[in-house]
Length: 116
Image 1 (spheres, rainbow, N blue to C red):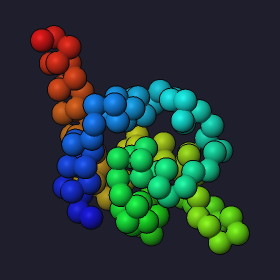
Image 2 (cartoon, rainbow, N blue to C red; image 1 turned 180 degrees about the horizontal axis):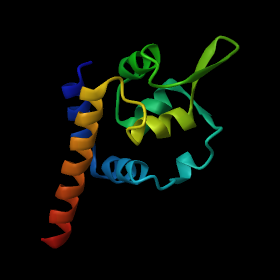
Image 3 (cartoon, helix red, strand yellow; image 1 turned 30 degrees about the horizontal axis):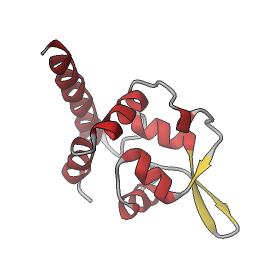
């Protein structure tokens, strides 16, 4: 999945998912993200990031998400998921710039909606 598609998936998330993502981006811990040592399923990681399973697997393959193998089943570490969501694990500079621009755009949209 291209970065543009990834960003589109985030931007088209439901309002509830966007609020949850906003809390993750700001570094606030949600009930689902309290324990950095927690391991979650691939599907669970996708739900938290508003991404599909294939995209989560691609993020794992590129080293942007860490996993632990439990009896042949992969689990994503919450710590790597939080770092990725906060933009601390970009694949390259272009990705880092896109993430920063997305955060700025999202916060601007939120500020404008609060004013209205």
